[in-house]
Amino acid sequence: MRSITKALFLVLFFFATYVFAMDVTIVWKHPNPDVVEGFKLYWGIQSGQYDHCVDVGMATLRDGGQYEYRLEGLSDNQRVYFVCTAYNQYGESEYSSEVSAIKITTKPQTAPVIINIQIIQNNN
Image (cartoon, rainbow, N blue to C red; front, top):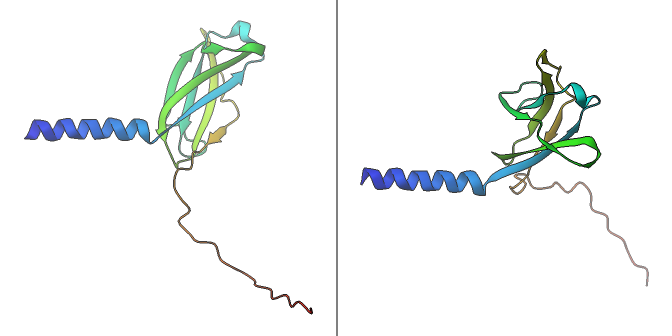
């Protein structure tokens, strides 16, 4: 019975992770790509605090010298903040400007408030 419970938990965990998750594609451009050996993406749920990092190497190069990387499985209904850095054998750059994304998948929790009603008389 214990192994069945564990198996069910794992199935539900993976189901919830992949059905209720946000995927984002981050696109950036570097002004001097000849000195870059790779990029790192940082993200977190508070502005300026990045708890996660992935070394994306040279990522995928698109037309126009833009790079892109897809992050999968981020939480829905949670704003996520992202920055990017470039690195080479001499070190890592400062953070890029910060961008954020959120995927709303719940209904509004608060009903609207009617603030005025106007009665219009028709004199016909």
